[in-house]
Length: 268
Image (cartoon, rainbow, N blue to C red; front, top):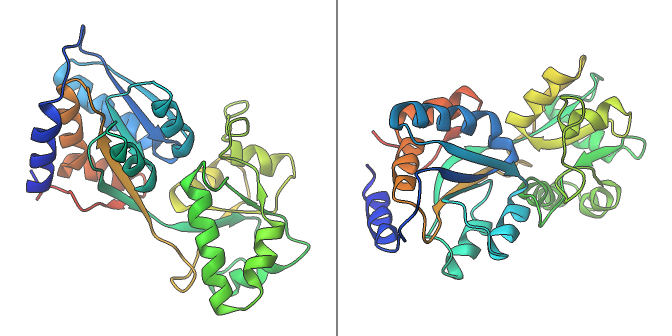
């Protein structure tokens, strides 16, 4: 195991309180739902310990923890939210356990390509959907991308900030409908023409809505997403075992299966 993680597990484990039963609870970013669900299934099958999962915007999950809910693990789509919990003594210091990128998903058209994507996004007639900044890291990464666009083409930030439609990532707009993800529903309702979000989620949206294509945002504009994993103070001892699986080669391979890139704590 990575030495930094071994130290973290030892420092957190001394704070564990006795727990009745063995069930673990994991709060995870919505973009992790498919990958993390498979990882916890592997864990439960090997350990016999059931795991309850809840997925949603990382900022909203962090608020629930601050308001008194106590999962054992928190897998956030950024480092900011778990770091805030750590500063309050509610969790250990987070470690980057996986990474993601931003992509654009939308209907095919001549500008749906990496070298023309900014022209498409700035077109006043194109409705651009995003997630909600401050509550969902996807929105934060997107607004950071708008800042990068400003450096490439002055005036871009104001234009994109004004036109962006925050269609998911808030307390009431992130629920699937009829088996379709929230972003897919926005496309099916004709509410947006393109959506900026994680590449992993964009691929899922393209599978849910026929005819959509996914374009990777070029490095000059892209803002890499670093996901933070932390063990909550007072967590059950088995939380460290699940965290170790997530960081192991097996866990990283399962994350990679869903399009995620390795994090810093990967086992050799």
